[in-house]
Length: 430
Image 1 (cartoon, helix red, strand yellow):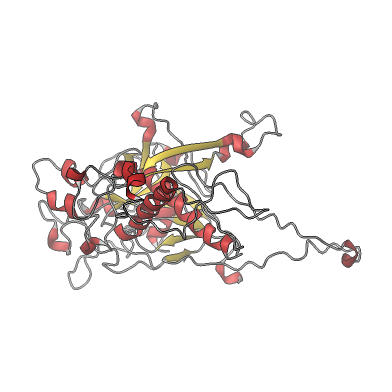
Image 2: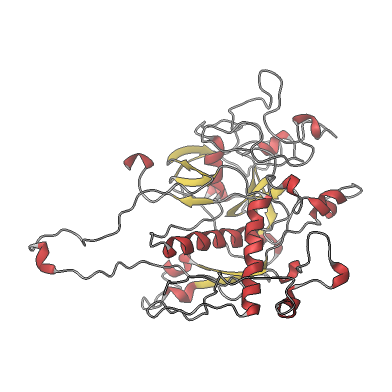
C-alpha cells in the first residue's frame, strides 16, 4: 500500500523530523579504517522556488543618513551575516491564500473523518489525513458535518461562506536558548520537547485594517476586495500579525518537508522570518553604507522616475506610481535580486525591538529573541519592522531605518517575506 503523509494544523503542529540514517553496515568493509559512515544521502543545495541566494558577508549597520528623530536607535556597528535564501518579493495575497485554503481543507477533512490507514512502521500518535478524499461543500451528506465551519446564511458573500474565525492553525517551536541555558537545563537528561512552546492563531487576514488604520478616510473598497479579488493576487498580503507570519512560515516548512518525505528526499531547514540584520544586509544588496537598495542618495533615477512606492510629498501618494500597495514585482530589484526592499509594505522581522539593542548585540548573526506572552506588558511585545511602506516618507524606506509594531496587531501597511538558512559555506562549493 502506498504510504500517505499528512499533518493537522488545527490539532497539532508538525514536529521536526530527523532522518537518522539507520543503515545496516558490514563493519568488515571498513578494513579497520576511519571512513565515516557510508551510504549517507547525497546533499546538494536546493534553491526554493521564488527565493534568491544571499551570500555570507559583512556590513556596517546603522543610519546611512541623518538621524532625523535623534533617537540614537541605530548606532554604527560592524557585523557578519551567514548566507541564506530570501523570498525575492513580499508574500502575496495569492501565496498567503494557499495557506488559508490549506487550513480550511485540513479542518474540513477532520470534520468529515477523512483519515488514511497508516502503514506499519510509519504509524504516528495523531491521525493522518487522507488528502485524496473529496470535499464537496454542496453535498447534502457532507454539508451538515461541515456546518460548524460555515457562516450563517445571512452572512454569506459572493466569495465566502466559510467562517474566517474557524480557520485556526497551531504551531510549535523549540526555545533553543532555554534548552542551551545552564540555569534552565541543569539536568542534561531533559528531552528537547520540554522546551517547546505552542501558539494557536486565526490565519485569515484582518481585512478591516484598511478602515481602522485611517480616521476620516474612505477605504472600504480595499476592505471588501483587497484580499479576495484576483486583481490583487500579486500584491503583498497585509492585515497579518507577527504571529500569523510565523504560523505561515511554520506551515510552509511542514508543507515542503511533507512532500519531500513522501518522495524520499532529504528534508530542509525551517522557513522563518528574517532577523532584523539579515533583512538589512539583504536590503543593501551588497552596497555597504548605501541609504537605499539601489544605492542613493536620491529616490529618483536620472529620468526623474521614483524608484520605490512611498509617500513622495505631503498629501501626495500616487506620484510614484502607486496609490496604495503595488504589484510585488514593481520597480527594479536590488543587486541581490530582491524587489521592494524599500517601500510598498514594511516587513516583519523575528527580532524583538529594544531601543538600545545596537549597544549590546553580538557582531556575529546578531538577534534579540523574546517570545512575549499575552500577559506581558505591551513594551515586551514590540517587534522590529523594516523597509517602510506606501504611506511612509522617504526616511522610513532607508535601509538603515528601524521601527516597530506590536506582535499581536495587523496593519494595512505591514507584510512580510521569509528566509531559509543556507546549509554549508557557500553556493560556490557545489
